[in-house]
Length: 440
Image (cartoon, rainbow, N blue to C red; front, side, top):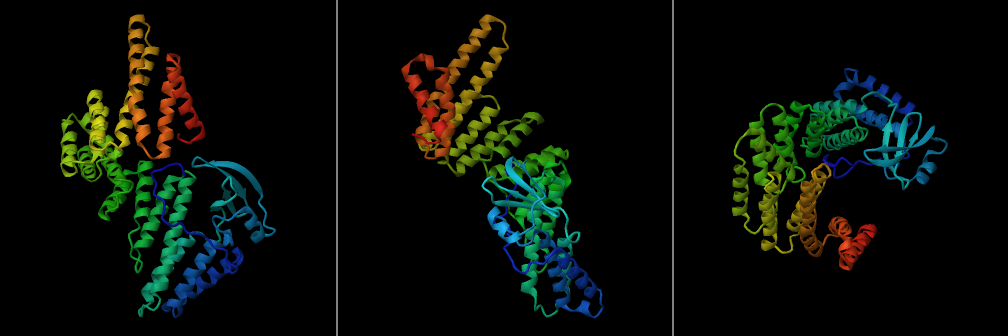
């Protein structure tokens, strides 16, 4: 969904149409029968008993959804579901996405505007905590399987349970219940770590930490993020370091947080999250912010031809409000790599944001002389943004970036359209790019 910092699984589990899917009532009875067998002293020593119980729990978990699958169209589902019609249909917004919700007696289906099933929410499970029951049954099966004859099947079963927990966590995240989501992601981590599967699910691990962090459960978040680092999983260019640094700060150990951020900066100097965390630390702690430049200089020594490091340096100067040095660093990017557009973009955005600040100051100024001076500075900053934005537009090969840059250029040329035909023509050019999404 729209909240971008949660990690998506590489492969989401999909329920494939299955003619053998049990009805909820049949699935419930199968669980009762399998549970009874597991309580028999003699049968409890057999791996088949526990495999049957695990399978029964999974059938019960899947029964409310029936034979439907994610990605199915409404037309396909009508053929499969026959007379099972929704009680109600309504338009909803989840995670910023507009969806169509169909409510049934024991479940809810959510469809994309194109009519594809994107989310299933079971409201009346056949048995409570079927996934937990399946997990415990697989554990017991592995325990009694002294010959290890079913190891492969147990691994497959545990993998499915872990994926289902991950999916359920994503559902809870989408519905905005981040506490529950974090608990479900943790269950996915636990299941994957269970023998004989014995894997570290870094996606679930990060998501458990992120959702715990989001609800300010910092102790739990610290545990998960530290495990991510131990597994050498950093997510999105070092986001784990940024989050863990913030966690330590919120737990009252800002110094430790800064140490974590510095470790991350060494590995991911381009990470804006890490950079902002470090800048905030040095600006609030009273320590010398020159440490930031020591770090960036060390990175330059390792990669002297990496233009992005000068872009990062520009961002540091910008955050410290040393705008002249920021522009100098941004423009050095082009000296190293003329095809690197972000230096130009950084300079253009800095000038543009300064123009916005000056405009706001002018609107609140009642002294005519000061007002006129601010307006003059505003107009200069806006015009100063033109050249770097034009260069960025010419250099970049990314059409989406071109459209974004065109938005800035359109606004600047519109503000100066009275200056002549050249400005009007440029406005028309970039306005067309923004409207069509097709760079010229």
